[in-house]
Image 1 (cartoon, rainbow, N blue to C red):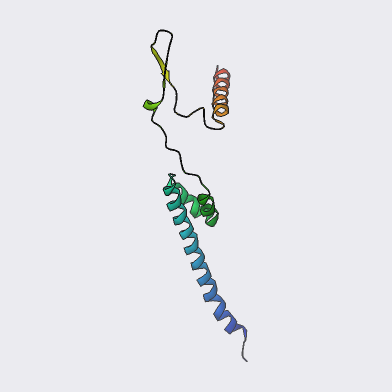
Image 2: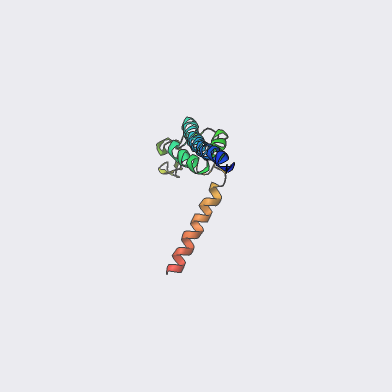
Length: 121
């Protein structure tokens, strides 16, 4: 007796294997392109490669939308502030306050450290 399912099954196995291999290759290509785009935009290419391995095409789309990274000024380029007698009092951390949310993050850090200190007493 002839079994019709044997011919259909012989096509499904290679098709599934072929689809799986192409999916893995496409996922890896998305990770590579995400890493390349991130490094071109001044971001960590290795980090975005790992994100690309985890999230695939979503990481690539996110990397396309990333803005260019702003170069970080060294601390020696920060403006110096002088005291009443002209002596240099300190230097501002470059760009710390100008970032959105940086002031609130600094306040939160100060509160957490203060509470940790008071609880530890």
